[in-house]
Image 1 (cartoon, rainbow, N blue to C red):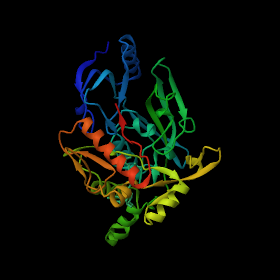
Image 2 (cartoon, helix red, strand yellow):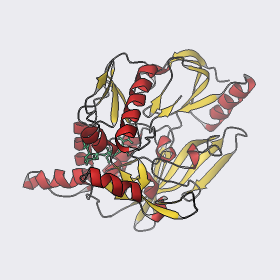
Image 3 (cartoon, rainbow, N blue to C red):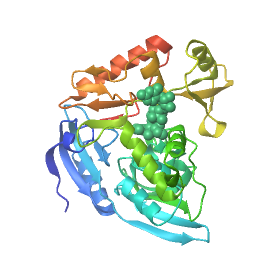
Length: 357
Ligand code: EPU
């Protein structure tokens, strides 16, 4: 019989270091324990929330009057899949970067650009983590998840997951009851390294000649180094990485903004990543992802902006930081102010990238 802990401060389980007490708190290490925890929540008629690394979460100051289920489903395996590929299966509770480091150490290609991202393996497909020109969806074969209503286990193919920019089926109302238990990846034994992303290209171009060799290890090292320069140190302040998503706007709106801000970086989205959206008249309109960091820096002049104990990071303004003792209300106030400023200057409505509880 699994016993919950009670009144556990969520600020100790989120990288933002924000959040009041959770009424009940379970750590589940296998599927039966997960089923038990769901059963407990049902019995108490309380909502549940599954917590991974807490690295993309803003938990409220009141805490959570429900059942937190900390996903500690572990285990990693690598199995040959023909001459060229390897199938890796990782438990949802595994630390994401430790899994990436192990894949790179074994010489398997596919995850190296996603080095250094905080959080767990289970969270990776939910928000389709992405960085430095890669998205995790391109390495995922399938996702195993348990239905919290019935306890049944189900495998979702890559297509079932309906991946898009920082989005998947698991974020939709039909997907929410499914709790990721393991993720199956297809990695390559030899591959092409992708260093097209601006920061990576610059990194290798400006490295001393002897350090320019492109290998799995040097790409991982480069990504870790770039991230160290752009992201605050989690040891010294609280953050959940990018607070907002990069906005996706119509080509028309992008062209209009370009007239005002000729240097605004934009990335046209291709059709298969939902680059086309039916407009109100049912016509499809091409869309462009724009850099919010650039807008915050160059249009809104909010880089390093501080409000109480919350700030936009001085080297990457899309990243909000808790400089010490901020509340969820402080974070929301900063976010509201930033959103209003972006709307006023560009007409763009920003969306939170961070999940709230
Ligand atoms: N920029 C500025 N001023 C700055 C910083 C950036 O103008 O102070 C401009 C530059 O033009 C730069 C551009 O913004 O080229 C993009 O910046 P960056 O390469 O840092 O990427 P991002 O679009 O701001 C996204 C992800 C990050 C991911 C990086 C690296 C989102 C919401 N964020 O940020 O993911 O690490 O790319 O690929 O898509 C996260 O999701 O939490 C996250 C950290």
